[in-house]
Image 1 (cartoon, rainbow, N blue to C red):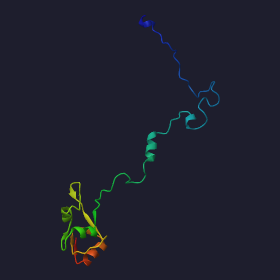
Image 2 (cartoon, one colour; image 1 turned 180 degrees about the vertical axis):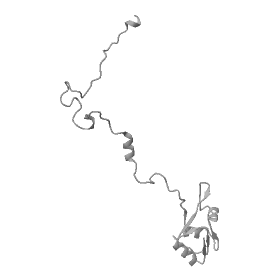
Image 3 (cartoon, helix red, strand yellow; image 1 turned 90 degrees about the horizontal axis):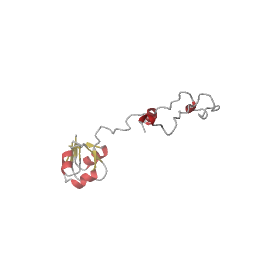
Image 4 (cartoon, helix red, strand yellow; image 1 turned 120 degrees about the vertical axis):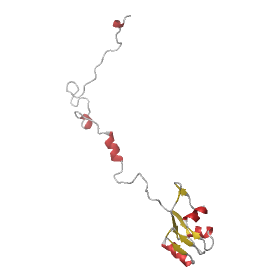
Length: 144
């Protein structure tokens, strides 16, 4: 057998050209109506569908860049501090009440939950009104 004697085993079959009149009837094999039945139809781009699914408002994906302070209640201070000690982020860290975030010490906010029976000096901490009142009632003071 020579190269010029090779023949394909199946016949070449041309693709059916739909929608150009002829023997296919009224809708020419395209079904009825709709986007797919029209001439020159293209399906709506997938990218548009993806964009429509994304939220319209800002800020759904990224967290807030502001540091949220570590929350410490008066009850915890009452357990870990002695009378007339200073409460500051440094002393809280030394007592193991604060975690380092990103290799640095967090800011602190003291809330008024629980009882305080010791005289404490609070400095360099944010403090709620109820906590400030409780500290001053116990004989302590607050410095910012």
